[in-house]
Amino acid sequence: MTKWAAGSTYSRQKFRIGLVEWVVAKCRPFSIVEDEQLHMLFTMLDPKVEIPSRHSVQRDILHLYAITRTRLAKMLQVSCHILFSTTY
Image 1: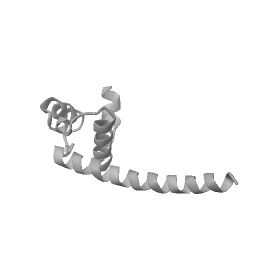
Image 2: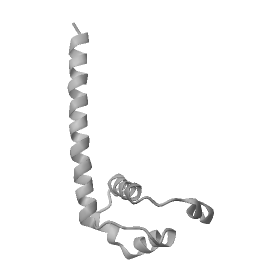
Image 3: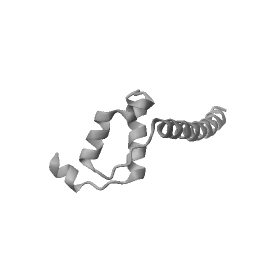
């Protein structure tokens, strides 16, 4: 684990996206990102880590939801047109 952590490179954007994905996938409350022990673990792995607030995580999740919803709606519209056009 130490070898892996020493070889990793921190990216603020990748960390933030990964954190948002984890919160959503594991059904965690937004406030989990403000947990002291979690902060300690993150800073132990990289002292330069910038941990977003729960408000930032919430905003990121809502933004990603809006993007995903729009993309899914477009995909379904295309799929429905294809489905209807091939059934005749």
